[in-house]
Image (cartoon, rainbow, N blue to C red):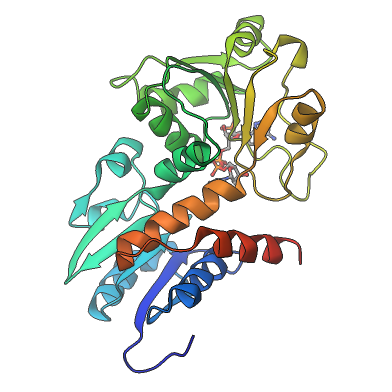
Length: 284
Ligand code: NAP
């Protein structure tokens, strides 16, 4: 990849941003595609968001990703918002079409697409979701949009989770439980798909996992842990030991990046090279 005077610009804004893996996966995709783009990480403090967004527009950036703490705050600064981003109330990808900024949330299709890639269809499935933070919003949106039959959310603090789930009540009836509650265990018993959206088990606390009682899990339940450090997580290892199919978060991370790449360039990237570079980078 050679940067010249004609190279088009992409990047990610957030704070902190040094840990972001997006430059790794996006530049891998750019190199492989042979397209004339470059993708950089740009630290932007909360107070500087409006100025930064205007600056990126003036500089003619083709587009950019948006991460913590700007995913919600950027919405009023954009000209258009796609349906998924609107439903979640958060944007992670912006496309600059000749000065018109459109916000998307590719985490939704990233979550769904990674499952589809392993042949798993959400339609008609009963799903138990662990955790109700920012990532859970994308997961809930994907589950509703794809036609899940039933969605139950298990958390440590149901009152806090209700605020998240209420945002979706006009689309689908989601029930919230304290995750040790027998009522939630009965939900996991009937669940076809169990999704962890908490950081329990994420590096450095790799021995942690959310409280899943495997005596209350159906034999054919599929476990999807959206954490990508480490891979596999303790939850995935425990599930695999008992013969369950599992999927880790790297697939979602690559897929959401691939969808953003296509929105910016019009070209579907090589997801295999993106995954390879991601795994290389995580194992360093
Ligand atoms: P978040 O907004 O902080 O939400 C985390 C959820 O987990 C909340 O419901 C929170 O409960 C719960 N939680 C956090 N710590 C807990 C603990 N010690 N015990 C019990 N519950 C706990 O985080 P997020 O942005 O949603 O991210 C969650 C995870 O998803 C992270 O590991 C992140 O790396 C991963 N992720 C992966 C992808 C991907 O592409 N694969 C994308 C986004 C996020 P409270 O509300 O009670 O605090």
